[in-house]
Image (cartoon, rainbow, N blue to C red):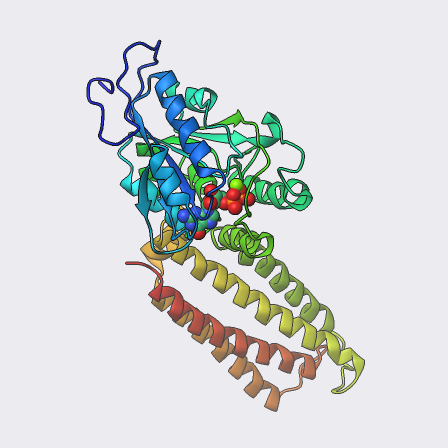
Length: 391
Ligand SMILES: Nc1nc2c(ncn2[C@@H]2O[C@H](COP(=O)(O)OP(=O)(O)O)[C@@H](O)[C@H]2O)c(=O)[nH]1
Ligand SMILES: [Mg+2]
């Protein structure tokens, strides 16, 4: 079917003389920002592969306002060039995917670091029913000088490890820019990010949405022209995306640890009747209160971010969110917060009249203040969380 209906575009191939695998129409999408030294080679190699493999397809270059000869060279080499005014690797790729006519898509840098001349290995998993094929440069061979030391031994492994922790999916090279996937997989991924973190977003969502992912060794060559990736800025964007998409690691676990630590510290300090204001034995009461308040805030933020990421489709609706949406909602937070704060006020009032046996009055006052602050926070953050419910 794919051969019977070649699509428009310069790179269309309808030759019947190759021993072709019958595969759907393939769009090879290349984001491009000032790559005049290499874009022509990449497009020519990709067109060559389409022809040799008898694949019907197109090469699409998404330009982001290059001010060199990239556009002219890409066009003459046989690419369809799409112009995207908003900057960003993710923006450019998403635009390219939207413009592409292929049923299957390939993405790859046009800096001549990837081998567009032979995409057979990358496509094979899709032929076999996989949803997404991710290149692995570590397994395919990295040319000397192709990857900086910090990316090779720190950046990529750290991001890969985080992805494994957050999703359970083990991917050999989470940052490889050469990938192939089906249109259906793309729709399920529902990509949203604008920058280089799109590479992580794709893996994270593929894992969470149960896509069948293949790891394919691909060689990686040295780039000509200036790198567009900025280690600190783009590294941070990856990290931020991954943490926001995993509120448990950012907030919930630290929050739980802090809250328990605070409660433990307060409980240990209370039996000490001789606590005096201004003395060192007062410190555990301060510290315990601070831990509890900060810990509870972290737990609340973790929950609020989970409502938010669920509403935006970054995380799946889990048991806690489902329970909240079904049974709790806004009123529960307001209620719990009010009860905690009022309990604190009541304790304060009580302490004005009674001196408890065997417990420190000052320590209990500390507990009362902690309850009031924590309660007010539950009330306030809870109301905000309900705004993020997305319903
Ligand atoms: N259209 C577009 N392409 C970009 C942008 N940033 C990077 N690219 C392209 O995306 C690819 C990846 O960038 P590169 O500097 O090679 O990053 P690295 O491979 O991760 O070091 C290259 O083909 C760049 O030309 C951008 O803002 N817009
Ligand atoms: Mg590159």
